[in-house]
Amino acid sequence: MHMDALDKLATLFARFPGIGPRQAHRFVQFLLRSSPSMRRELADSIRALGATVNQCDACMRYHAGAKGLCALCADPARDASMLAVVSSDADLAALERSGTYRGHYFVLGGTISLASEKAKALRERELLSRAQERASAGLREVILALPANPEGDYTAIHVRDALAALAARHGWKITMLGRGLSTGSELEYADAETLKSALENRR
Ligand SMILES: [Zn+2]
Image (cartoon, rainbow, N blue to C red):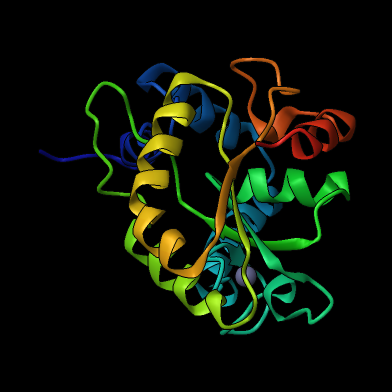
């Protein structure tokens, strides 16, 4: 099947999360009306993602720094006794913005879908090895800071089970955020005060 440039771009946009074919075509129409410099900036930014963005070896988030550790993981002032497991880079950023958490992070890369119960895409193996590595750095507590919705809860139980043997061996406490977060809310959209109370009321 031959695809012209319009269809090709629309097909690519339609692969984005939450974007259907109609919205994808609207994006293409928007770009057609945009200035050449805007289109160039967009294309350059997308190209730069591969060239300048690296994944942190420790927390696995994407960052614009050099290869290896991100600035957070390389910071010796962070509290090595705590490791917060979050679902996404956006949730990590939200906790950071709240200014109430000074420990380390691990980005799981999603939650388990209740429809398919697939845990395949989650970085579970990486979590176990990073947590194990943090044992000698003085890790005492793993905080499951996952979204306050059924998928987040299901993922938390799954991760808790996966960590159980290591936690028992090293004497780690495994906690979850308190329900200062209203049910269904993403960490990403919670305000600093709410995140602070969710952290203080973890159990
Ligand atoms: Zn990192």
